[in-house]
Image (cartoon, rainbow, N blue to C red):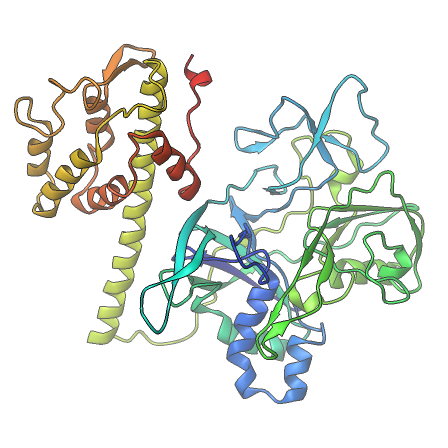
Length: 520
């Protein structure tokens, strides 16, 4: 029986996990936690107390394998959408948060409709029940500082893509033995820092060891084998040369099978990993990308080899989270996706494995508890502020489109008006009195009289005419002073009355724009 540690990773702060550590300009971020990051996290804590032989066995030999951590939806881990799934151009890949049941699976003998143009599913994650994960991401722009002068370093402006806070991912570690499992669990559970810029406002994560269903057993085959790559895979042929089109004997010594290139869907990528010990980059890795589907015909493989394929994976460098595959998933025998399970679910039970430690009631522990609650409160305030800000920007774009105002004209409250509101909030701690200063009909900051292109801008919303002042009052009706301060920090940072400010917001905060065609 396999010995695995399953864990749930929740982001406390936004975290930055770049696609390649060789990136020097704009860092393209991942929408999952790679196994190499978890390997580095555990290794950094266990290396000092292990012998060289034990360190090699745990972190370099491939006997202990660290999986990627993928988003959790409805208490199930979601896996990369197979590249063999296609949908008609003009249709949507998802329907009400679930995968479109009319998607066509082309991994087997399912023919295309010659009168329909299809698009391949190239990204996203899906659960066994068909629910599609939504990974929240954002972009932040930074600049390096000159250590000698303390000023901005010339030519050092760069952007980071990050995973937003308060998201949960699930992964697993195939440990090989109970001793290794116990050792890894001890250092894995707790609060850690992960990814880039860990010394600033990024990187904090909370990891809990959880109870979860075991990895599904490999399904029997009949002369045909379907491998669904649920992580990136690094494969080599019999000569040790990297290959994107491996034969079955390259993956399982002694097995035979021919790769069906017509029905396989293989996407590729390359990664350059930075080696901290040598202070340089390792050799570039040529990878079969996660989500790829490999179909083999004329297969001859024993049950033991089949189980090894499903439990240990394929290719090399599996300790870095590479090589995980699912063998003959349920969807591989269906032309269209129906309501039953698409594959054997890996469900997670949020029951953390508690240690038998007596509760400590000290002033220090009370302070730590208060700080933890304060941190969660701050994250909630930021999320609420972003939600309201997105709604306000959509209202402004809708009003601009309805009134046919060109992008070159300023439209809506100016930055000066937002700063006046911020000044009121700065000197207020009462959740009621500050609203009087904003919405007083004669002297309030948000009065509509005499401000036809600011607070008084109006548009038809389907039920009647509304103005921006009314919409603003509705959006912030239930907001606290702390949440309003977070909202105004964003509003004062971007000038959303100008088209360039709206575009800047869309890029940096990952907020979609409302097109004029949608209104008209």
